[in-house]
Length: 125
Image 1 (cartoon, rainbow, N blue to C red):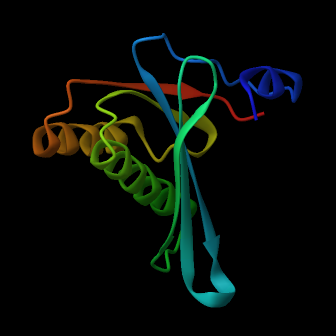
Image 2: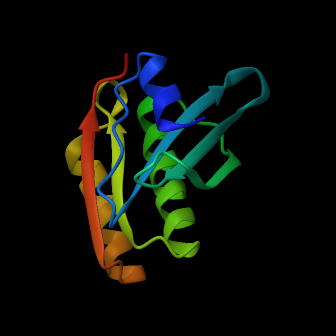
């Protein structure tokens, strides 16, 4: 899916500046099988997918915890894959708290020495 396809679909996704990549992620809870799931995609300034991942996670009791775990997993994936100049896009409606996300960001910056990391909060449509 290209950036144009995303805009035509009515989403609010906007491409990052040319010098950085944008990381989007999401989480799901599967109560019936006692697990959660995470997915992430990294796109460039043209909207091209540069990397993507999915992972199974532990059972969680609320969506806030699932989203926080997804954020951490997505950022670990991005940094491990060599994407150190990132804009991490967080959906406001489901963001646990900006403090919790900021703690994850700081922990990963310290542990992985990312050169540029920005958190962007957007509304889900």
